Image (cartoon, rainbow, N blue to C red; front, top):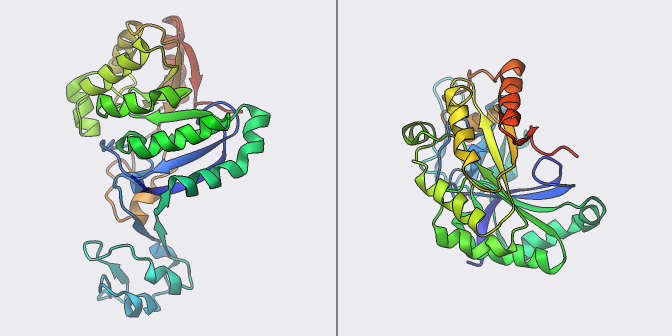
Length: 304
């Protein structure tokens, strides 16, 4: 695979692995977690992000759209029919208010690596490196492997953030060139996992056990969602992890709404818009419970 769609190459990150890191966000994911804060990465395709609050209703975009995806509503508002939009970006070139931008660009491994290596000095000075995130990079194992190998050849630390829902062959293809897996365990009860993510979790558990058997470095990430997995289900997660050899590090990631506006910008429904975050008391209770079970716990992920 020569190119994939990348939504962002985010620099100076300190929550996605040790040291200062550059995070590469792949577009495309097999799960549909209801709380996801990166909905622009659900699909392996570019998407026009349209901020109606910035729109002056000038109508230039209507004239420039080759696919007739943009029109004017009865009240004069500008409408975007995403069924007709192919994210060509023509409308963004003429929007003086910068109300539109295309999220996602098809990039080669060489293009991504060249951008990542601009931060090489920070990696060397802090023990940082490159983290593949998304979306889900295991959907593109050949591309991910080539990128990881380039980083390893330059002595750069590599990490992969993964939901674990992939074919075992995809994981096997890349694992030797991954220094650290940041592995999501969201729920344990299969029916609940399917309800909240769209998929059951047997494959996720089998892939985690495969990594452990192969002596790969793994840190477990638990997104903590109020009313979903902060009670009895959290204990079930701990009970499961206690039986997975060598798992010692857990990162508890309390749910937040920092990316909720992306649903509006990308024209997607967000059913958890009014969902409350876990209270500090509940987060602390979960942290203490995990520590009592013998795990080393970090709340919020790495923070240099």
